[in-house]
Length: 249
Ligand SMILES: NC(=O)c1ccc[n+]([C@@H]2O[C@H](COP(=O)([O-])OP(=O)(O)OC[C@H]3O[C@@H](n4cnc5c(N)ncnc54)[C@H](OP(=O)(O)O)[C@@H]3O)[C@@H](O)[C@H]2O)c1
Image (cartoon, rainbow, N blue to C red; front, side, top):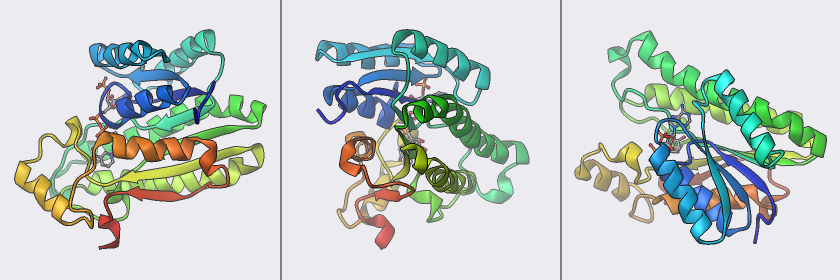
């Protein structure tokens, strides 16, 4: 029970990496807030699965790029659980995969601002409570593409690099308040976000890893759990790749 009695908010937890993280956190004793944007049915399914295994969770809708919606979500969490010990900034914003020269500023900046706003809104909402308790953990889900370019992924790479930088700034500013802030950076992971890729492209990506396979959501969830738990209690401001070794190749 690595997270016994902890309250964890996971943004974008109705599907993919966030959903697996929510289920794993609940198995480890956390009370979990399953945030979603559009997909209420999927979020409810995650909650039902957790409850069926004697875990505790509830789902709450909020577009995390919208500060008013995040504020309302925090009111719901406040009424239900009181505070947040662990924030996982995970929501996966859709974006246009295309060469830089084929993107308008609106398309490019939508991803960038969205990624920054979802980080800003959710972090700002939980940090005051963490400072008051003198403890808290924030884990941001970045991407291997924040450090290594991918054809057509310029907006994603730029915005995830900004996430990495913000993690380090917050780790520095909040460390003396007992708050740890870290980045987990997945490589290609099989979720709805990557299901559009032809199998050939997925296989090519797998062949560029040392382990010769792409990630599954639970591969990433286990590392997020490590970062969220006391197993990493002296780790902050760091960037942990979970990519089968592709970053070193
Ligand atoms: N899959 C990969 O290969 C990969 C690689 C590197 C990094 N990542 C990162 O890992 C994270 C999770 O990605 P994933 O592959 O698990 O994505 P996914 O399967 O597409 O799931 C996206 C999740 O984010 C939620 N979401 C999207 N926009 C939101 C918003 N504005 N407000 C609140 N929730 C929102 C979705 O909610 P609804 O169901 O309601 O739409 C869904 O729960 C992302 O940050 C992504 O950039 C993924």
